[in-house]
Length: 270
Image (cartoon, rainbow, N blue to C red; front, side):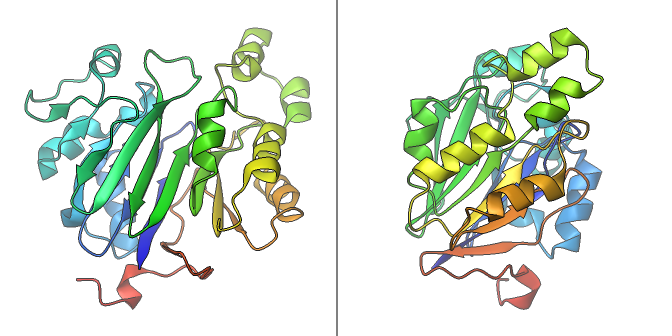
């Protein structure tokens, strides 16, 4: 049994992650326009009719800008905390906005989605574990500190989208003003390559088959550099970069260690 996952986009220009089984799927965040989300889904051979809900991590624009139109067009429930909805000035129909609580699983068909708090400069930020078919997928981005909550949930993942936002030397020597550098590395901003690698090295479970390096900074990171850094320690885990410019392939995540990315169009999924 498998889950099928892809990053439609990952970065400060928009974030959207798809996790599904043979029957239903959810998206974590909707930071692309509705039209661009549809384009990328179509290129991957995915159908929006399988998407049954949106789960929103926090209110920053790169995570919410597609919510209103996408949810209205496809009549999707939006799982979002009231504080996040208020802070994001999101005008959602009352019946569409559904609150969730940390550590309380939400059941969407055969998928179970559990949120937990994270350190980020937002009003009520959360990360998510999506479970189904005895497989756990983590969506761990926009994290200032690799806290015990993150470690605990990372240790149960067969695959994860893990933030590796910036190279410490590139950030220090870059053109960002001091206040922005301080915000990024100040414990409520983003994870560095070094922090993400330490988490991976110390707490990767033996059954983790895939790790997607996510939310890379355009100005303070280099996909080739961070990919090489992680591959030195990858072992049997397949490392990929979730791009800020395009979708990844659809990956088949199973509990038997299969490594190859597959597209839904290559499978009898519909």
